[in-house]
Image 1: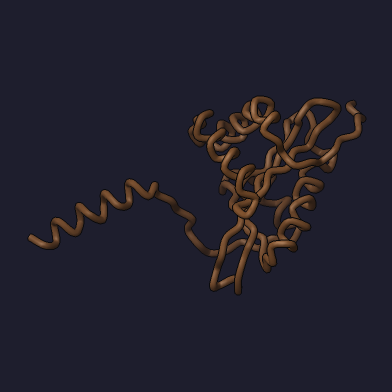
Image 2: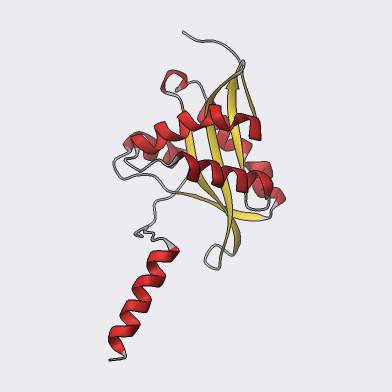
Length: 167
């Protein structure tokens, strides 16, 4: 059994190569595509613009074994700013040791300093373990359908639809 102590800290540019395999593991386990360059671009954006969000890593010795990404948003329904837990992942060998809880807790000061009122997240329907864990922490399910589309694709479809309607 591993008993090494772990530390939570903010991601740096020097960490990107070590973090990519964990991001890939999360995306693969969720059935999502993984694009290393797109991931690096997004992480560099957050690192250069802390007002967009924050990335924290859990480290054992010199090894990154988990991470969390929080990004800022605004919601009229939420009454102001909110923090979106965009990604949370702990390597399988390190699960069950409190790292996910510590990573989640590490976002609280950031959210408070940015006047967030609510913390939101998304979790796959099939991920019963994560969903149950979040619900035990007090997260509530919403009767909503989460969906997304690239801005480019939405623009293309709206222009096509507008073109058809103007005939």
